[in-house]
Length: 118
Length: 378
Image (cartoon, rainbow over all chains, first blue to last red; front, side, top):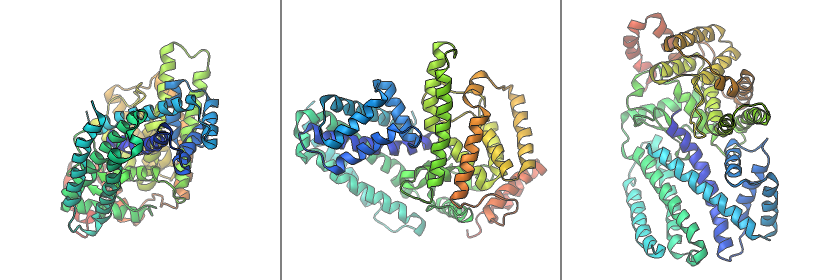
C-alpha cells in the first residue's frame, strides 16, 4: 500500500529488463556474436511490447515510456526483433537498443531515489 | 576518470562488503526466517561473480562498452544496497514481534488458501512507508507496533496481493495476473479513446491524459487489483480499514495527480471498487454503512468530485476491474470472505470493526483483551 512498496515491485521488473538489454549490448558492442541466451530475453520483451492487449502492465508501461521518449513507431519494434532473430543487426537497431538501455537505467535510478525516501 | 582504476578500487570494496554481509547471517534462525536468510545468501552469492566480471571480462575492456560497464556497475551497486538495506536489515533485527507477525501472516495465508509461500514480516516501517511489500525477498514491512492493534491489519491482505502480482511462471496465479492485464488494458483503451477525441480541450489536458495513461499502466491498476484482493479476502474490514486510513492520513479523495509517477489512484476510486466487491460478496448492509461514513468524511472535509476524476475514473472502467479481479481471485481457488467464516483472523478483524462502531469509547480496552485471540500461540 505504501509508495515504497509499489516501487519495490516495479524496480524488480526494471532491473531484470535492464540486465537483459545490457547483456545483449555488451556482446554486440564488443564484437562478440550474441548467444541465444542473450538474445531471447530481449526478443521476448520486444515482442511483448508489440501486443498492447496481452502484455503485462509493466511491459506496456515501458513501451509507452520508450515511445514517448524516442518517438519509436510501432512498426519499428518488429524490425528490431527480426534483425535480432537473424543476427543481422543494423547501426540503427544498435542505437535503438542503446536508447532502451538508457531509458531503463534512468527508470532504475528514479525508482532507486524513491525507494531511498528522498 | 579512468574507469578501470575506479572500478578496481570500488569493486574490491563491494566484494568485501558482500563477504561481510554473508558473515552477518552465518548463524541459526528460527524456521520462519530461514527462507529469507537463504534468499539473501544466494542473492549475494549471485552478485559476486558479476562484480568480478566487471574487472575481468575481456568484453568490458573495449572502449565502446564502457557505458554499458558503468550501467552494469550501478545496477550491481543497487542490488547489493537493496539486499543489505531490506533483506539483511530484517534478518539482523529479528525480535519477538517480527516472529508473531510472521506467524500471523502465515495463519492468514492458510485461512484464505493463499497460493504462495507467505512472506516474512519485519516490524520496521519508516515514517512515510506504512505497510510495504518487497516481493523480490518475499518480505513485508509493517509499522513497529502494528501487531498490537487490529483496525489496520486488513491491509496485510492488500500486501499479499502485491506478491501475487509480481509472481512469474506460476499457472496457479495466472488468472489474477490476466485479470490485472485485462483490466489495465481496458483503462488504457479508455485513455486512448479520450486522447483521440478532437475536442478534448487545451494542450495541457493532452499532457495529463498521457501522464494518466502511464499511471494506469503503473501503480494505479496494481493498487486497485490489490485493494480488490484485500476486499475479497477479508470483506468489510478491508473497506473500514481504508476509510480509517483516509480519515487519518488522506487528502482530497478525488484528487487525480498529474505526475506520470503517481503512486496511488484517488481514494474515491479505491473505495468505489471495494464497495462493489463487498456487494458482490453479499455484504450489502456493510457496503451501505461504509459508504455512508465515507460520504460523511467527504462532507466534513469539503471534498467533491471534479472533472479530472470523472474523466479518468469512470464507473464502467472501475467495474471492469471488479469483474476481472473477482473472476481471477476465484480461479486461484482463494477463499472469499463470508460472515462468521470460522477463520480466526478474518473473523476477529471484522469483529473489531463491529465493536469499534458499537461502543467506540470502549473499543481500545476491547482490542487489548483480544490480543490473545490474535496471537494464540504466543
